[in-house]
Picture 1 (cartoon, rainbow, N blue to C red):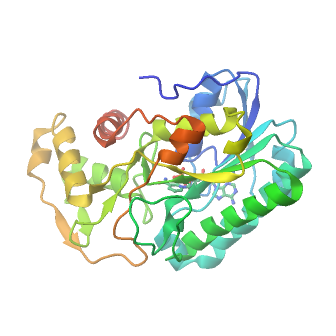
Picture 2: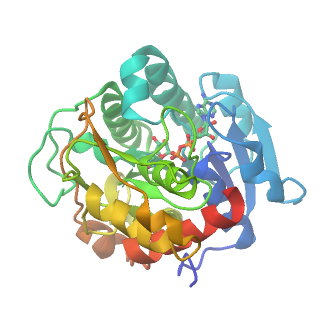
Length: 332
Ligand code: NAD
């Protein structure tokens, strides 16, 4: 399947911040494949050199090792750039609970540096990774862009502040911005290791090693798990839209269905047992609920469909099959 289904002019120079991370490196690859020139700004806090290893010899790819907390690095990275896909941030709710100061420095001060650098370099459009965590304690389902609750973690605050700053920059300095509220993204290159690993790669690795995945809570919490190629599609659409009514706003980026954690593990076991039948017998364990977790998350994707023509090609089953194949081939 073509992961983008979007035609993007191939002569652009696009800056991907956090381009060595999970989502950023997938974006770099897709943009280069389309023929664009890409600059990647990353300090490798959580990103990996292997994520961009295949791009390093490509003359259209340029890596700047730098930190978004440093305005000069942001300014250097913006030189000659048409569009920005800003992905650099410290993800993870628990990380932000353990160290709110660093999360704020990177996610808020770093974001502001990037906005200032983008404004001064007269970038055509600043597209940034927002987050479904902005819905906070709002109980309404599905989540519609205009109805948010109170943030439930320092991370959620940082992502909400990003939206507020982007809005002010578009109104005050005429910088075009689009925020993409990602919902639990998964797929190739997502890091399965470390204390702050996301649930899908962590469970995949545990199952591949015949270890029991531990579900926090009773397994009834649900998420709108979103395959990486749907996210790539939205980023390309956000860059390429010429509809002036579609900019200076935020969009949900999701599939539009929710899956609870019990179901998720059973799908993973089913797909992984095609490679190793023993995985079907691995037991699931249950642990305490995690602080700051919202019980359910499900997006309305109507706004993205209406304004940007978003058409997600991968549901959770199709995405998980691809992801599992990739982990088996690359990390087993
Ligand atoms: P990731 O950790 O794989 O990627 C983040 C990248 O940013 C890494 O390469 C890291 O090294 C880089 N980075 C961190 N601090 C930096 C700094 N100070 N200067 C320069 N680079 C820095 O995470 P990801 O899952 O690819 O997330 C990308 C973006 O999407 C983040 O903004 C995250 O908040 C957002 N997001 C992700 C999800 C998800 O489900 N993965 C959901 C909602 C929002």
